[in-house]
Length: 211
Image (cartoon, rainbow, N blue to C red; front, side):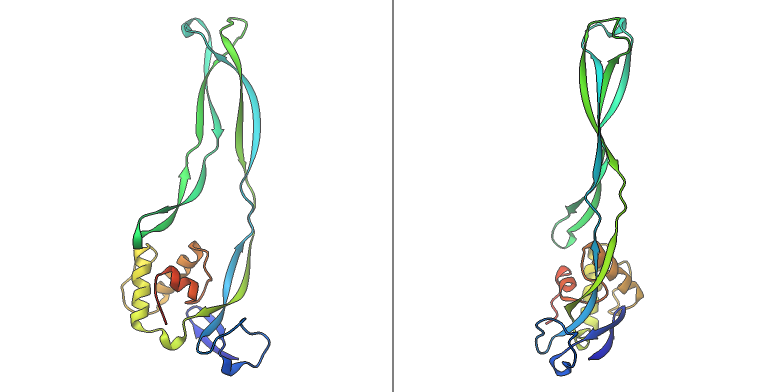
């Protein structure tokens, strides 16, 4: 087993020449490099909602000025968020979009003894219930770019593509500096990619060929 340092941490790389332990990547191929990368597994459950049903005497008449009414705004569906794909081509990215609450305004009869011009309407509202998310982290063997293939031209492409996706704001220097590593980590986390290396999945997501 040979220990090298790539990007953010010390990772274990394996080639067939160093097959001396059972802790090896599955089905390794000659000439390729592998590393144990950090995988974040989000175990948070899907959002849960608490439903509540209530009946309202909704006014149906044509002379509201003669009846004591109350305007009530009912939240039928609470505000939420969802991931949405925006942009085209190289500018395509995923954004967390806020979805506004669905409201319904009702004219409620305050005293039903004063008029018969109303109907009972049952409204079911939903309220989001807060849940505590748990994230487990584990490591898995992943194919990564070999150290000898990481050059200034490749790093410049990485910086350019991260900049196009709004993750990198620095100079296109071709240097794998702290700012580039930070941007790469943010990109990997945002896209549920292995964290901490130039692995095959990350390079594919950045549309960069390294063979």
